[in-house]
Image (cartoon, rainbow over all chains, first blue to last red; front, top):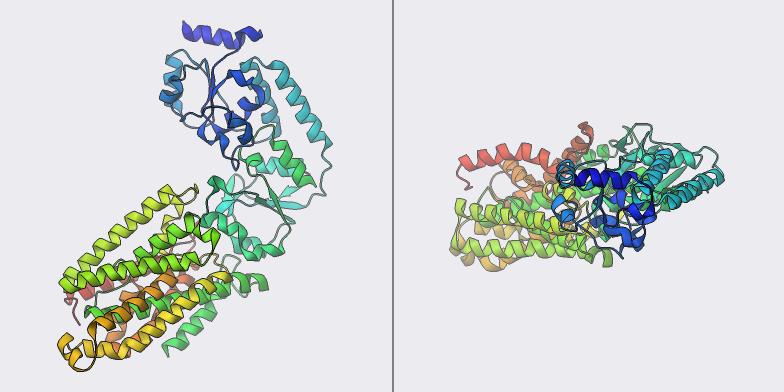
Length: 256
Length: 305
């Protein structure tokens, strides 16, 4: 009965029926929740929400409590809506659903069409239709305003040489910026330093900051002196970590 | 002769890498492959000389900086310095911390050596090595970087992938100094082979000699581990393979062992680049494949020279 009620609440549009205690247990869901919800609607975010290397809303996220991404921790907050990510947490979702709590599962957003659709979807679930429509329109406007670069190949190179290929969010960003992806494989792969130098891209895109704020061999690779000769553009890694409204800033940065 | 072979292998290793076989473009050659080849030569020499000297000092042919825990302790020092901010403040902290770790390991082991010998001493070293590897794992698990724990294979098995010229400056001086100490101690190790009283009557102070060798080994292992992680078995394999050719005397073994260690590590470093794995294989995998049989063989012979 409570579950039906929750679903009914989700599906009805008036602002009065909007969920008032929303918990996100996923980094990418955090991005949408912080951008779309009234601060009073947010009960908690995932623990990664405040890492500036992963979360494009790290600054705003600091104002909210963070919760371990488990059903038990989420239940303790007595939420009326839980937003989860693409993977994991099936058991958590089942437990929450049994308790009559609505769970919204966001698949991975790997292109701008999906980002746009998820803005509207989460906006509807939060009862923030207007804000969502405004952001979707702003996304369209800013994507259309990008002056595409001349089709040169770019390579997005991350810690330990991890590289997004075809069909990934970074690939969509490169294309929106008017570039091609120098990584020819589909999905994610590794490009070794020597292979990179042997066949250098027109633009090497590196993360502008380290994850977790610590040092690692994986991230030290990105500062190898042999890279100094290449055209490097550092960008905020959080823009590419999750498909969100802020991802448009990556496309703007790479078009220039 | 062995030195020439090592130099030739070092030169050949310049032709192998992810960019494809043959001489690479200048920046890859100077910034990646040359530092890598020199680091393999230096680290191999350091480990070979350390193994030969330790085997002479402890009068035990099973002694090896990896097996006895020196490399593990050096890895722990390097991991603490690298992942917890000291290296960012000053890169010199990396070799210094590895050196401190190796020295602490050497001091502990020489303490054991006063009470135990033969296989018992080796077992004490194995215990120290196990402790060090657990501490390395714990430190990496606690490190702030999310990539730290995945890098455990580098620190426990060793790798020279994508090193830079700066690593030569960090590892070179301690290794050269350490090798010099070990080379100058090699004559006295011969006297020690006759037993401590005889050595003392020949004017060799066993305690002073032990300190000199310990510091030499710590400098060598600290320098090598700071840049390559802990590569096991090189110090064990090399002297045991050379003994049938050169005899038992430490004075005749230390320098050839350094050259053969350099040769062995360069060959291992070429092999990890040629074996087609998704991620580059770690050096310690190959040295253990060679080293474990040598260990078993030496152990069956009783461990004593």
